[in-house]
Image (cartoon, rainbow, N blue to C red; front, side, top):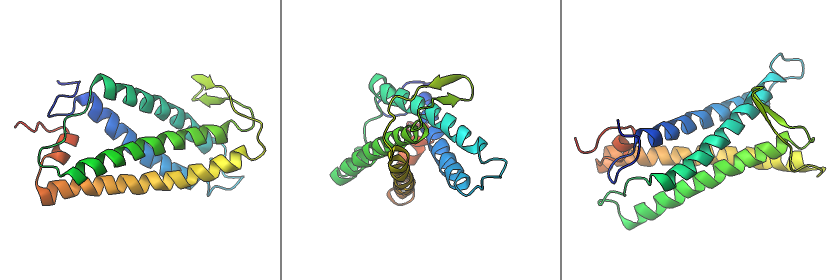
Length: 185
């Protein structure tokens, strides 16, 4: 079992983090859309945001580890068949996804702690409220959170379509590498 990335292949840890983050982001997006539609007397009105916040903090920890892991175990080299524009656009898209995800997580934190209360992560530990006091903090951060959530979903769909394009039109191993198949076989 190959945990670290090689020059030609993603390791199992990188693949696991990639897919856990992808699934979590879509689940959080769906949860967010659902919970803002809840009425005050709905039984999930108070529970859904607490779940959303807890998962958001855990996702932040995973994303921080993911960035560190990229330095410990750099991703495989781009395929030689990639054009210059493909290499540049891929790098820009990946960087944007990282920036947007961290911005979503930070804005979620700012929404959740605007009242000065810490975030309880499933009752396991609390994350203190460090930045409070602005009368519009929750509203401003909420607007940013919403727009960036849509942006990351749209950008990740573009990312997925690019992987499918590589698989079905370019007939290269890009998608196979991200699904964990050994490109050497």
